[in-house]
Amino acid sequence: MMEFSTQALFREDSYLREAEASVLAVNDQGGIILDRTIFYATSGGQPGDVGYFERQDGSRIEIAGTVTGRTKNEIIHLPAPGQALVGPGETLRLVIDWPRRHLLMRMHTACHLLTVICPYPITGASVSTDDSRVDFDLPEAGPGKEEATERLMELVRADHPVFIRQIGEDELAANPGLVKSKNVRPPQGAGSVRLVCIGDEGVVDSQPCGGTHVASTAEIGEIHIGKIEKKGRENRRFRLRFGPLPVS
Image (cartoon, rainbow, N blue to C red):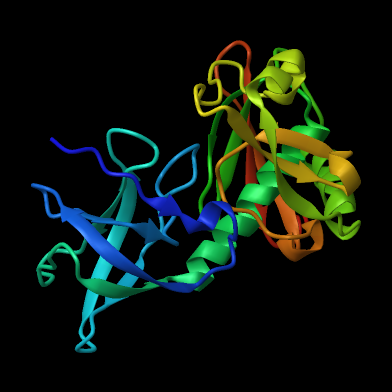
């Protein structure tokens, strides 16, 4: 079966809400593959985008999810049940559910800040619009909810810039501390690695990541640690939620 590659516009600009694209193919399950897309595909704990495609006659195709195919570069858009069929070569206007995406961008950036105040190996993570989590290899008790929230909000209020830069795989190999995940390594073989950097010249944090993020930490807004759970002998789960820390 032919292998397709989609230009991932979101990797260069997370703020794109609309774009035009052409249909490359429709797979056996009805998934739509485009020549380019603004829809983020499920990866790295961040869920894929939803939204709709608008056809030239003004009708819409609702997109219920976005995933990767046989490679990270093959991005498949999953229509909701009962949608009209499209064909190769058709031009579509792409529109993502922006309020949902922006919540995910804010949350994902907050997860990066959490790894700054909890500098321990990451064993798992999941980003959602209202309750995200990061799991750490942390056998001893770390900071409590109040302390972690206070330190997190200090970084948010500092309004640090968030930006992307590319480094060579050799540079990553020479700086293994950039990889915070205990068990997952960035994909190799592309020649370069995408870093998400926070602070001037990445002084606050720099780590490989393919997700979408806001442009400054202040854009995250009020956020707090809702719960810290012990998951096994050496794992602790920190849950992130929007809004101020509730008064106990």
